[in-house]
Length: 232
Image 1: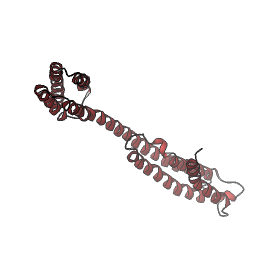
Image 2: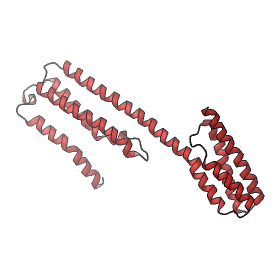
Image 3: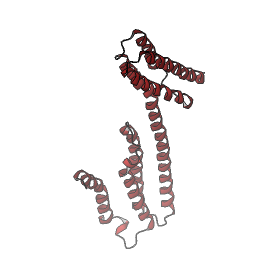
Image 4: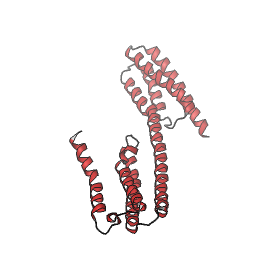
């Protein structure tokens, strides 16, 4: 185990060590009596459960470029639950109800509310991550392939071919970013033809460059028209 991991384990263990020392050593707690009510042990267990969930928060964070943005609200959820549980649990330990019924009810309601809050956030988080990924894919069509066409332009000297590719660059660069399932088929064709165009430019085949540019222009216009019609 790496040194940094050992240090984190020690840091995360501090609360449990201190809490358990206080729990078992303080003379005015019900734990020192010959028979501790079950209700005390229930609250004791829930406090540990809440803290372990707080420590394990990174395991719930969906990985992505905005990792910190996804993690911060989740830490708010788990830390709020831990703080509320600690206050509630310690209070119930000190009161030490003779029957476990009231403790079970309170702890169950509190935990259920937390789990519902956590699940709602995780579901929303999944939607956010999926939307970000989809936006990145959609942006790739406009941003990345506009850059490819700009690179192609720098390699062409024929005026007619230059005008064709310039018009194609303007069309792709100004295309709508938001896409849909139907338009993606056309986008794949455009991408395939742009890659073919790059290969043709290296071979300096002017007629082929013009033909491919016209084909890409047609496909790109059809893609944009389809998106426009779907938004009407």
